[in-house]
Length: 456
Image (cartoon, rainbow, N blue to C red):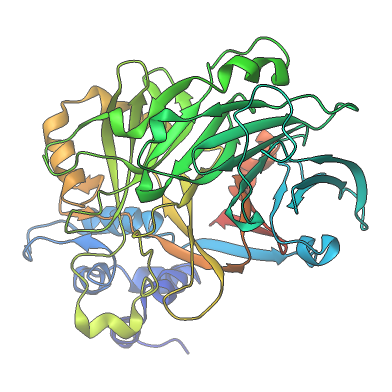
């Protein structure tokens, strides 16, 4: 015998958001029992939704439309399967300062002024080559050379296939060709654009034809000429001296004058309007979180389209025990990493450092739900004033007739070690479309971890 619908609704009223979402999927009768405006209002109040004053005239179908959209944006129906690897690169090579190629087959180590390249495509590491660091002690070519410094102060990055190695110290960058048998001079430059700063990280991007240089205090430089001709090492002989984007020179198009700089800027995919980017909300502002928008490197402008807050700004204290987002991004670190899914509907954010709840030395991984590419294009074509004000306020990008939905992150987990790569893997188009699955790969110096993210 089934329960009376009133009793079912009373039980539903005590469910947390994810349990209520799952209960509606059990059977037709349970779904029918959930079709109540008071019940839906209660559940919407537990989601990151800005609700207006109660209005009895609002139709039930509008509540349903708002709930379905809020559940999608909040990822209530997302299933995350974690597959943790057991490989520990630091244990295999016995070193601490390493870089791993994007294809996972090469590993570079810097130790005591010597660069060692390993083949890690098999279960055991094997040495491919060794060469000295180009410093003042044993300099080759015209320089600039590295000064003698502890290994821990250097920053390393390998190209996707492991053929190139970028090494940075203070404001000097060198790029080595690891495929040559003789030790020629690396391409090198001194970054005058980094005056008053020092290099805090380097990474290859854009099929290894640009180099993202992270400076302290959240500033970012992109080196390269964006040319697609010529061999990679030959290309970098001139490209290493070219700064095609400096985050400090970007004029931010925003309705809030306080938003003047893009902290931790990272370029994502190419579009007809420029480059899609992600960045931290200016640390000087009151509300924390991230921004997404379009950046024009030629015009040196950035248009903010999307606000990704760290916290839901109207969380009822009575629902704190049921809250799914009690572990949220700090958005205060200056060197996060971002990755956008191939479908464009998810953004992964890696925040280095210890978590809020544990002492894991590594970082935290979060996921945001994004609007589709077409919706972002529409946002750019529409008049900017209203959407910019909404983004600057940290409010939603998705509005309905009876509410505004915030895009709040869901925490995937914590991973130990120093991150070396964060990316969404390519999938067969038909498989990805039917299964609604995204595969997120995270590589650190201790292990490789894969998440399979699928929607109902």
